[in-house]
Image (cartoon, rainbow, N blue to C red; front, side, top):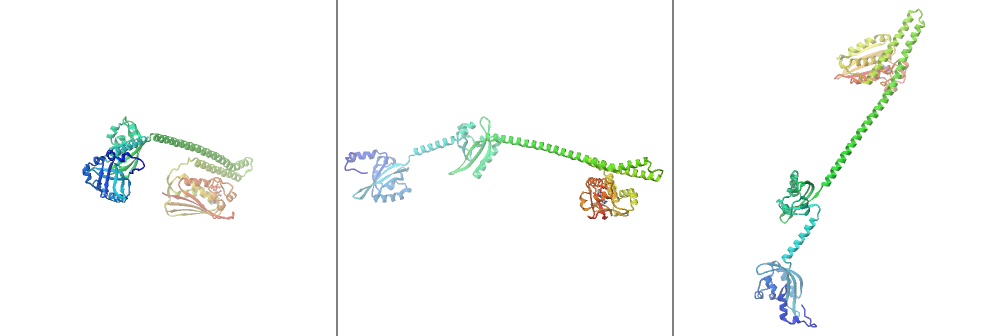
Length: 528
Ligand code: ADP
């Protein structure tokens, strides 16, 4: 506060006017001497703090300072006495009635001849309560406007009381409950009956883990339900706990999910249909290929079979022609010889036709297995007996080597006959006169092992892999014996496998076609 000597100043020349100015000021004005005693306090000061002028004249500034600020005020006073002024001093006064008043103001110093005389303090109640309230209300309005602008629903409720504290307009608007109704409801009351347990769990999870989320169906006042995604957090303010959450309408999302699901199902069905079509096409292709293959095999079979039948037929016709033409003359012996040839070739034809029929039956799979107990040793002996004339004719030595076991085996008798006949007839056929045939039978564990071992022409090593192929005849066999169908071993293998057995052979691989190296054929049946 300064006076100007250059300009006339009416106010400061007039002490009464000056005092009136201080007295009518709306601020708390005080002047303190070097001992801290009040020299002057204005009306506002007296009104607010509740002391009379008289009382104030007997008081010092520490009498009105809140004890929390005394220390700071003493330090400040020391600085003031050194001539320093202070702006924006914040402190607390204590009124006569004990009321604590927040104040802020400026303190300047009056000096005379450079020496401290007194302080001038002008204070104002820092922020009046009503202003704080206004500000709070303002802020509340702002935050409410903010949460009301959210399209999702927003809510705050107290835990564990579940009392709704705050919510936005979307919540009342969407669910159709008024603010008054909402205030009386618990958050669970908004949830559809079926999801109430899940809602309860969500609240417990939020309380336990700080945050959680769940999809729940909400039931509006008019009864319609809406799927919502809720996400909530747990907060604590002072000693109170709250759950703050938002909910997002996921109707569209669900619809899209359903649509996606429908499309996915359709795709799967379509894929399945395509697979089925593919399967049908594949099966049809396979059938066509199979049919082609069968047709090809059939024609091949018919041509090979006709070719094979042609040889004995030609021979038969030739001898009949010779008989007719009288080549035998009167010779009964010749006639008998010709008839013998005709008979043998007829037999050969019957054998061939039998083989063809067996192949066709096997391939058509009309050969059904009729099981009955068969004594394999007896069966073998019966077959050997039938072949006795041929064995004798070729002067072959027949050896038997049967182990002392029971060779009764449940199987199809016709099939066993086919197997044995083919192996014995081959052994006789491919063993030159004077050779030897050995028939073996033994048991190895649960297996019955049958062997037909000869000292015949053998099977060349390079052709052994083809020996069970239909119509296959090894070179040495066809040059040694012209007649042969190449069907016997194919039939044997098919039949053996049909009744669950195994067939194989051993023949020392020799490059010398003219050496009798012998062959051993084996068949194994499992007796269980
Ligand atoms: P086929 O005897 O009518 O020619 P198989 O199917 O019975 O027809 O026999 C096929 C071929 O196997 C014979 O042509 C022959 O080359 C060979 N083979 C079969 N058994 C013997 C054997 N015991 N010794 C030598 N070769 C044999």
